[in-house]
Image 1 (cartoon, rainbow, N blue to C red):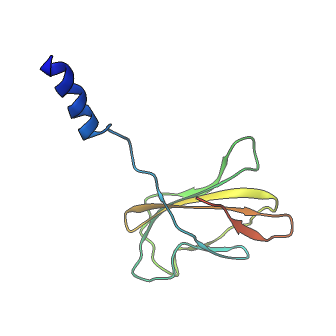
Image 2: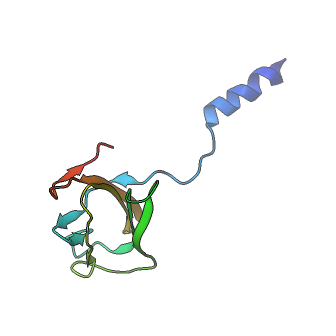
Image 3: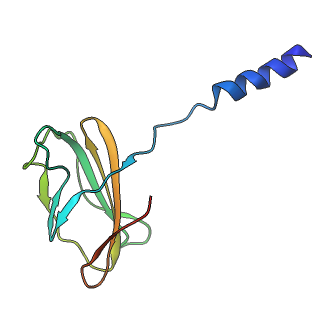
Length: 114
């Protein structure tokens, strides 16, 4: 009888093992077709991935991995298509971040709520 009580209690207190933690929300710096991940020269960009809703579901538009770039080298040119939502996932100083936004048909950027 004790085992029936102790075992579920141990599982409740320890929690469920999970996978990778979700990335933290953090905005990027976008000016026209210019995208910067950070303006601090101490920050190091490890990777980035730009996804859009242009295709059915999300489609990877551009990505680079195994990077070691600091500002201003962590800025890239990217041609945004209007009328679609985007997700920019990136690693900065070994931590994972994500920026979700929508660009309307007039080119106005709206950050998505996390």
